[in-house]
Amino acid sequence: MPRIRANITPDVMEWARKSCGYCLDDAASKIGRSVEEVSAWESGELQPTIPQARKASEVYKRPLAVFFLPEPPEDFQTLRDFRRLPSDYSSEFSPHLNFLVRQTQDRQQWLRDYLRFEEMPQLGFIGSANLTDNVLKLAKTIRTMLGVTVDDVRRCRGAGDALRLWINKAEELGVFVFRGGSYSYEQIDIIEARGFALTDDYAPFIFLNAQDAKAGQIFTLIHELAHLWLNISGISNLVAARRATGESDRIEIFCNAVSAEVLVPQKCFSQRWRRVIMDKTVEEGIDSSARHFNVSREVIARRLLTWGKITNRKYRDLAQMFVEEWHANKILEKERQSLQDSRPNYYVIKSMNNGHSFCKIVIGAYQNGQLSGRDTSNLLGVKINKLVGVANAVNIPFATVGGGI
Image (cartoon, rainbow, N blue to C red):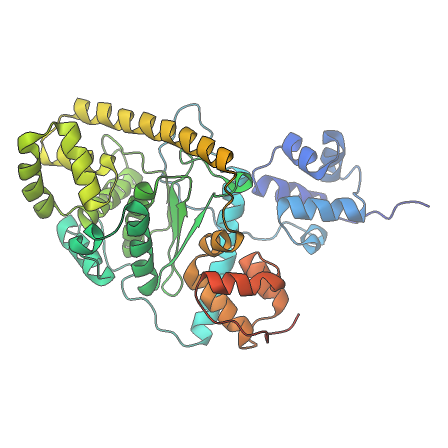
């Protein structure tokens, strides 16, 4: 009996592959077909079977129906790229990053429509700043709106506790913060991206790379908040430019400066540093100050450079040392986890991947009958029978009734 072939559009099949960043070899390997076969689908020389087309839709994370469109659909615009990458590092987004950005854009579109239908107000701080603003004043405004004081951060038990505090305050402000990269199959190298911001006056999203240190994620969060204040979406890896050579560099330098001032106000820092450095080396003073403000040592070193207390050479040496120590600690951490066979809680990870605020809104819409079970599952990336676990992870009650299948 002859196999039934899917009458797909070759150009759409090629677009689907390229839009997620797969070369022919990678796509063929993941679909489980030969390179020649996948190439023939894209040239029109051969049509896939229905099961093969379905497998391609899973790999490319596109609905099967898309392959039958007469031409490639208009996709979301590519994020503005603010990264500074090594010369041997590809500027193309990896498949994991491509999927994540596209998924976030889908979620943002749904959430914006939902919040507007619910007649929620626009967020006034989006686009309320520009690059000519005074960094100190803008940082004070952001800190005040977040409602976080230096003492609040000092009372946190380490960077993990401080990160939760900053995220909670950002979500209370109306920003949807989520983290990804906990599982090996979804990891994104921090060289490729430490975070990104998708601005919107109803549903702004911020992504934090969970592969980064907790203190690093804190800095990224505030950096991306500065992007929202400027109303500029984009992806960053927060590699500092030595000098501004264009608008993108100026934006990143500005957002870095705002983030540093929010987290370590210059006035507070200078007062503390004068006391600390009296009986400590520069390295010891940096360690002590980083613990005091619950930030990374690199942030403290950057403050000292800005303040003129260390040279550019000293800063670069310190930054390199911090990176090497961080990589060594990551290796030790992985070894400890493998020995302990410690696996992260599925529901905690899913709530982190989606963001607590987003989970609460989606689950609430499902329980109110405003969202079908299928759409709820698609938005959160979990099966319906797992919703109660996610609801518990974000501390909301869950009823068994919902919007149906």
